[in-house]
Amino acid sequence: MICTAPSKLLTIVFMRFFFLTLFLLPATCFSDQITLHFIKAPTPTRWNTPRSLTLSALRNQVAKVPGGARHSIGHLFVELQCGNSPVTYSGVTSTGNSEERRAIFLEGYGMGVVFKNYRGKFDSQDFIEKDLSAMFETGRSNFVRFEIKSSTCERLTQYLSEYERLGYHKIYAGLNARPLLRQSAGCSAYGMSFLELAGLQHPEFVENWRTYRIVPRKWVGGPLTGNRVNILKILTATPSRWDQDLSRGGFPVDFWDPEKMHLWTELATRDLMGSATRKFPWPASLVRIQKSAGVLFDAREVPTPTGPFFQDP
Image (cartoon, rainbow, N blue to C red; front, top):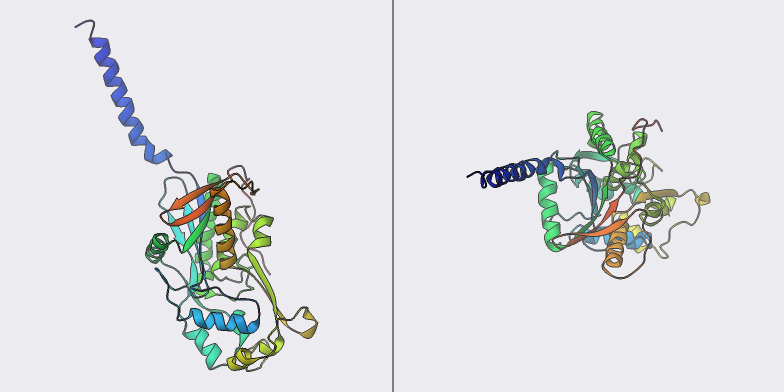
């Protein structure tokens, strides 16, 4: 008895320590992360010419998709995981397509629709979870994920609450809108505002995730010009070209492009799968969720920015 008691005591101590560790594990196993999920349009949105853009936009209104919502112009969701708090999903969208269709077919906006604001809303948590689940099953979406400081994650959570409190999500803004200038946003600008506030808007992304064009003035209807532009004129124009400078009175469009984001991520994940010695802004690794692949960046050394969320234009 005297010889076996210490052995039993050690066993009891060990088992208690083991179960205590299991009990505490859920509170410590999560890192602070922000993820941007990129969903490409059903078929490529072709910005080569005004005509090709219009044709591809119309085609994507009816194109079939393998799973999830259509997202005819592509889409972006934000996912926040702060410590062991529940995952928060966020995204902005229009309340429907009726305003856009009316502007195009009845009000003569022409390509002015890309500058127009519409009634907006947040995508619901339930919708995003179901939509992403369908995307993961087919591999239609991909993503970039950043491990960040807990203070940065807290800052982004506060920004989301403030964005909602100010009602900016009730406007689904044109492509040029900048959310941190109190202009509301479309889905991609909204997502990128999180990276900007986290100090993660790297030149690599600025160079590869944006699209810039100058829309000829003759194709812009609505309040910007006071003109009415029939969409058929854009579809039958020969030649069909973007303006090359602003001297002709065209309107620049400069925006974060979900399809470029998706393409960049697709190429990046291929490099991570292979033997390419590609340089990334931060240490990077490959992550998979079912058939979707993504890039995980370790950005925990990036300092948490300070200062206000919003500035006046």
